[in-house]
Length: 434
Image 1 (tube, rainbow, N blue to C red):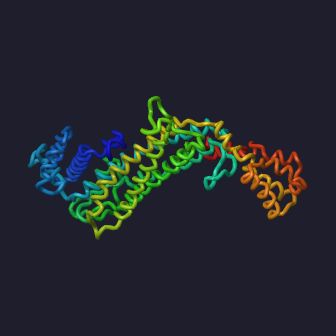
Image 2: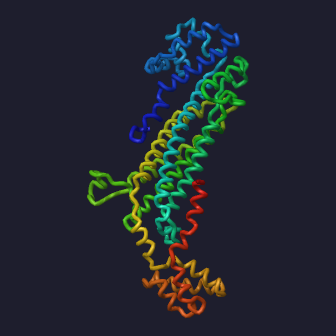
Image 3: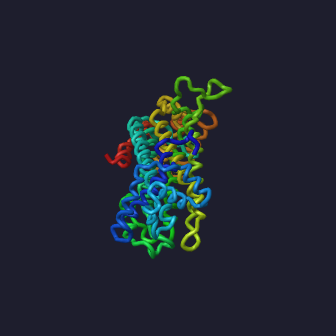
């Protein structure tokens, strides 16, 4: 990813230096295990650790690869330059390149998962804080973009909290599923390497041995991992879209923080645009776009081909770096979001009580009016509000068919906002469980 949408800690996971360091640790731990099993001399295994403080020369490895046309061989050649050719002659014994590449890739994905999980927890904390702050801040709920019934801003944040809490669970499951390694040799049969080597390497790297790995780790694991990232991205866009809607001039119930000196438009000095959430919408599209290639990587020829390799070299860094940046940006947006309770009330009352239509409908049916007649009466008076700018309660009180079923006090009571917020505490207890 470009630096504009990258954060250093996640970028570092995908650097060539980090990759080669993990490759080295895989090879060194494998040598230790083989020495313990008596497969190679102990002295040779110990010699490999002479490179433990070496900063591998990426340019030198690239130079060797230009000749060998093989990245793992290039690395092993460079490692021997530090350890010594004779001392390094047992490195990679019985292993195949995928043992190194796949195990390393999963280590990187696990480390990336840890950052994403931390990001998600920070976002959840921000959402919970704003939910509690605005638990009773009344606003109009909308369906199809049209005024529906009253809700609260706190419930909006609580809804997003619950969604992101599910996403936290998805990320944790994705981390668990991807945390496997394979040191099983060509076509995964352990013909030239003892399974105990795999067990040792995986333990040292915080992984579980892959139960059966052909020559590669099965890519359904990776498909599930990237699918989880795609769902998280979609949830980010869900929140971003709500904020973008709230910031529209004719709505203006909330807006992104606009800092001193910030400019909204090169042409129109008055503009305060939802640029961060629009950016998040675009970043979500990028992450989702990487899910299908991951799905298509599942089907490989026989025990192994490398059609997945070029895909993963791109989507591994790009998806995790982008999502890390997006989660961090969204957390900042939520923390600093400017909310306008007065405007929320103005919008709620814009159509003069119309949003209480269901309460009147239910009251009429409970008073003995058929549902069909009750709906006709309520809709008839509601259309006067839409079309003539009338006041809904006034029209109901003037309708003899309505007042024949409901008294004045009953009609007045149906316009109490508190009716719509009476279960907020119940919902909060379900969402936050504390």
